[in-house]
Image 1 (cartoon, rainbow, N blue to C red):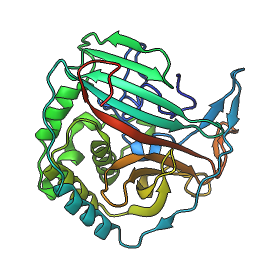
Image 2: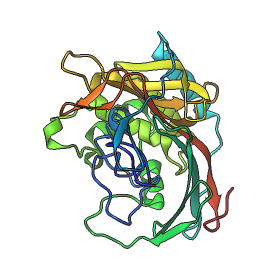
Image 3: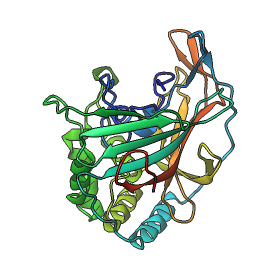
Image 4: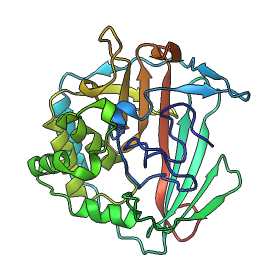
Length: 316
């Protein structure tokens, strides 16, 4: 499946989409290779959604967004999420020859059906496998690239393990971490709070084991960022309604100053575990006079399964 539109999440999903660079042909980035302007992730992951027809024409999506309810006390919600995270049990460390499995559903605007994508990534980062809608599996080796600063699952787990777990120190660390600060020059300087929200929300999304004390610190650090919005009743791609985190202060605005889209990280309303992402188009998204996405359309994903397995094709 090739990406549809400027910011859809296909095989490059959470990798290069997160720092805004195009994926190299043949190098998939399904869940661990983190990169950037979406790491204005929450504002750029799917800010523009376009359906591609069989003939190659681009048609604005027509799927209608749902109404959600903003919560007046986002800090209280995030601190409650931290308490829930502290209760989780720490996961084990996979062997180098084991594979990280992920199944995700993707809902494109205007499509009557959702696609189910499955990824297997070897823990040492040397191989990846992929299939869509239970179709044939594609498997590729990943050759080392000295110019590639992306991370393997093992390297990413090590990065997480080294992060500070005191919320203030964690916030200061992500604001200063140059690994995440790649941003197109024409976008200008990214504000530090936007960078922090972008990075911390990506940490919540990874299949790599996140120590419970770090996950709790992530929520407490998010609670210290002014301007974070929390909505309830935000649906993922399969209709599970959760708590949506967003940061409007860094989002795209039109010529009239109106917010063009709102990008959510969707969490389970009870456990606060990651469910998926959703982008609501609040205004028509126009580029060069062309309407790329109509007001009221949306893009969504849903995480269905993940775990550690011994070989591609096997599920947890």
